[in-house]
Length: 287
Image (cartoon, rainbow, N blue to C red; front, side, top):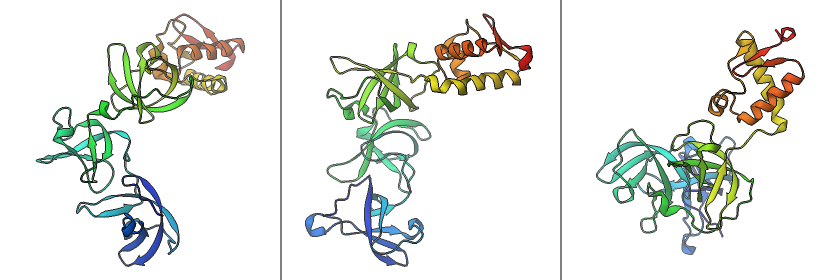
């Protein structure tokens, strides 16, 4: 039995080729399927043929007819995304989510009135009554409050949700929120920014502490080369050293101060640089 997930990518079989596109098997309507689903001609892959299974995103078009596309939206149902308002009318705000039909955020789903041209963090879901794909900026309602099963050290993708007095709240895996403390961040972050984080700790109450990932030993040779290249481009001198603040180092090389100092130590031991409190210099033989 074919099951179609609205607002998701589905692998569906081509049943019919027509001049204006092709039809896909959306399941028997008698068994609560969607019948044949149109994929318009402009989205049809080359060499498509009847019986072939292809991956398509399924949603409702501007006339509320079910339709398929091979385009990739900026978010699927069940995901959070930072999207721009392109229009506001009596129904609510409409967001650009990468498809021809804009995504509606009804006024009842807005934490504050949305304005055209601004970006907002939203959750994409399918409305139970209308079955339409809709968005909401009432983020906390959609976060999972059950005890997470992540492993300490696990690497995850996240979206910055909010800034607080102690750090940044980050949505991880489109399910939970975690805290990235200021002392674990080497450069300012912005709301809606996508970040890679590590699980530092899961507290007994289910709250999650996060870390920015650190470069490991295998990355240091690349970092050393970057430092040497930067030195050569700046006449053999960089105004970075042991006393340089961590955020300045991160903005320049995207690494922690700890790994920066490790790289300097290895370069120093190879007699490629000299290290002073406020600067590093190429040795004469490296110039």
